[in-house]
Length: 555
Image (tube, rainbow, N blue to C red; front, side, top):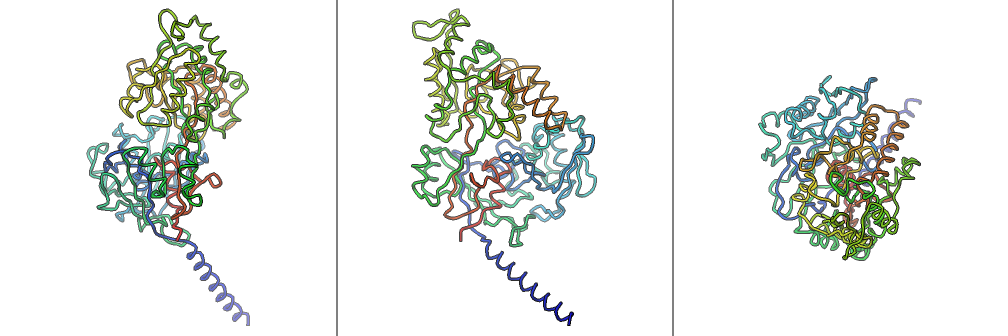
């Protein structure tokens, strides 16, 4: 009798499992091509080389993947090609344990040898060393076994972990035969581990398509390989206005452009389906050249800062940009600002700004511009050509500076050259600039403040440190931060950096450039938003893949 009951229970359980699986499968929709703006203006050039600075965005994550996903919005490291990682006790050896069922899209197995090979390419060819990993103290990379890789560093550097979210692994059996990987243009049908493959014949000067990899290693809720969508069509544009009109019309599912008065121009077209979310992105600064007069004078820099009303600037922009606090940190890190830094903070006070200029010996000339020893506070204010939101901001800045006796003439300059060339060489006084944000203020300020990134005028300054700021107290705080995994001590060290920054004011925080993100729910669901911010909608790196793997067609 017990045996009969047991069999009956098995049959019932089997039926429940079968029907529940069927229900789950029924709840998962598949299919559809997502229409996405390509973030390219003008002619699109096919380039899927992950080592090229001109590679198309879908190269990163779509074709080639990383060991981990660095989710900068949540401040989390998430497993990807490596399902686990850990530091050895001495904090100088980092170990990754790889997924064992991953294949390149040509059918070859993905192993630790591919990881070691990829890192070796960066060591052999310095110009393609991804994420600057070989400059971080990395000594060697070894395969412990087929699915375990170790990275050995010459000293403790606990801040290196997010770098692995920007190191894209390539197959040894393809790239070992490439003599010059930095310039290889024969990668028209890329062999990667990613969820998409190139759609042969789809590439034109204004659009291209990637389609789903039928053998992708990540599995969906229905037991089939991700993604749920059939692919992504990247649509180019001749300029911001054309791209914005396509988004507004509903032609685009995923938009990535600035749209003025977005509620009136976009949302009202289809209130049920037209949505947007503009999370805090990169911090935008008014960059002042600390390497030459007059902005090698701290008091002049602080006076300029007191002349600017960030809130009013963003109101005039009308773009959704969030005004920055004087310390230039995201809202999630306000509690990292120590009391000493708060006391140093420069607030908008145009009358006090005038007093500060005059205290430095400046007097108004016949044009109402402050002048000293025949040198007027008159400068060009550089901004990239066509960046409409930034241009609006510079015009507001120019007006506010004029009100305190400083002449700032807005000059639009082509991006990236010669705009970036001028900043890198120090051939400017005042310019718009930005810095990438990261997991904590450390990653943001490490891009701009260390003296090692600076250079004399006329020589190239690295990264975003074109302001040429040098401060040994700040440098030591960065070194101490990297040498510990004590979170409380790291927070104190950031406090030291913020205290020096708010006092010296080497550049002036203006606003957080929104991550432009419009999404249309008429055809696809699963988008991140303010209520479900599971990742950043930034399209340049890996984080976008969480979106592509989450999207499902409405029908």
